[in-house]
Structures are given as structure tokens and as C-alpha cells.
Length: 341
Image: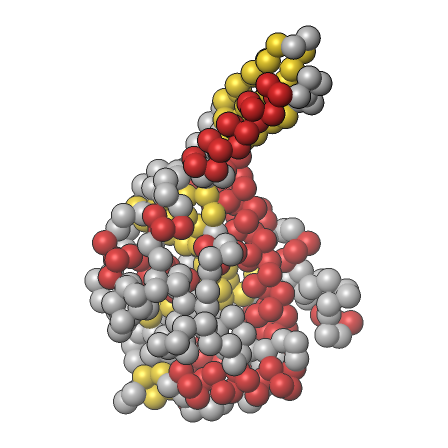
């Protein structure tokens, strides 16, 4: 609730309490303050309670988010499984977190037409009291990646689940983390779950902006780049220390966190331009000469949606490539093993 809405509600509450003889106790909350208004024997009783702030650091946030990987939401439910052998499939088994100040200059640069576009909302547009932005990379399990690598033309059932049910899990996880931080006295939100979020690629065939078919007002990949998680590859995916095969979530928070830093200065610094993702691409939407053709990619996603409705996906540029599990040419970071076989 913003300050204006809270003040209006507070004013109405006092007027009602004064006018109604037997006014029932009412409570309103704003940030970490709770105000209770009651009426006894004609007298107004006002109780103000300020919740104790609980400040989490990055290590604690990482531990909390890692713990969410064990939640049932990170496994395919029986009623959703495309086959019996996929019941209980674990979709993600590792997280990597990056943080940056909400006023980092890179966010404003995203408004350039050649990057994201003028519709890109700054952290302060999402949350007035924004101090930090968190980006989290959720790494696919080995089973999900192997299944996709084994089918060169179409997405595997494991990959389809990780793309759709996996995104549902990420939305749930980011909301859970936002709730945890907000409860501790630091308002936070996940832009991709906010009603103001708009994306031209929420599902194939949908165009949210008249000036472009492939953009949004909050880009998870660009935010991850700004937060120091990695750089772009030829396929326009993001190469992190844990590789490219996974998905991202992000938060805007009033919690003031130290930036994790960017260990790179170039947009494509981690990509070796080997062209393996171009060879893997079923619709040949990627090339060393022209980069990625988003139209061809989207058309193929439409075909997968027609074949696998209500799911869709591809991700062949994320598997069987040197950047699948790390930055090419660098030592891989240890990942948790997939416990579900």
C-alpha cells in the first residue's frame, strides 16, 4: 500500500470510528507498521505497532533460495506430468545470485532502443523505495539438460516441464523471497509477477508493444547482466559461471545490499563465438554472421506450441554447447548433483 492510499484509508477509518457507536476493531498495515483502531465505551483506542526489522545479507538470501529448491513446487506433480516416469522430476538444483544498487547507471541504458527500449521500467518505477536489485540464476538439473541434448529436433518432455512448470516455480520462489524480505521490514517485489509487467514473449504469438515483437518492460537477462551474473552469448542467452542452461528471476528491494560486482566489461565477453549453438538451432535462427533472428526463433516456438500445447519450448542453444555448464575455457564451479533419477 502506498502512502497516499494508506492516508486515505486512515482518514476514512477515523471518520467511521467517530460516527459508528459500536465500531468493530479494524487494522491497517503500511510497510512494517501496523495500526489498530477500536472503540470502547465511546472512546477511540489507537494502537501502533512497529514490526522488528530483520535484515538479511546475501549469504542468508542465498541459503533461503537454495532451500526452496527442495520444495514440492520444484518437482513435476503427478497431475501435470506428461508421463508416469516424469512424476517427481526435479527441474532446478542450483542457484547463483547477483546484486546491484537500484540506481546503477546500466538500468537507464536499457531504455535505449537498441538494448531493451524506452518502455523499460527502472527499479524505482517498480518500487519507490528501491535500494537494491537481485538477480537469481536457476540451473537446470542434469536430467533436464541430457534429455534435451538427446533430441536435436524437438524439445524433450523434461525440457517442456522445466520451461513451463519450471517458470511457475521461479515465480513462486521469487514471490516467497519477496515476502520474506517484506515481512522483515524491507518492501520487495518481483517485477515479472507484478501486474504492471508486460512482455511480448509471454507466450508465442502475443505482441505487447506496437514498436517491437520481442521486448518487455523488464528483461531478466539484461538485469542478470547488470547484477554481474554473466554476459550474453551468440544465441542472446546469458552465460553465467554455472553456464547458460537455466532460467532467471529477479527482485527489486528496499533492502540495501552490497553489489556483487561485474567481472567483465564487454557484453559478449564470455562467448567464444564457436558457432555450436547455431549448429544446434532447429530453425537455423542463429548465425555467426548475423547473430540471432528472433522472428525465426519465435516461429519455431509457435510450432512447438502447436505440437505440445499447452506447453512450448526449445533451448537447443543451451545444451551440447561449450557454455552449457560454465564459462568456456574456465574452471567449472561445483554444482549439486541431480538427486532424482
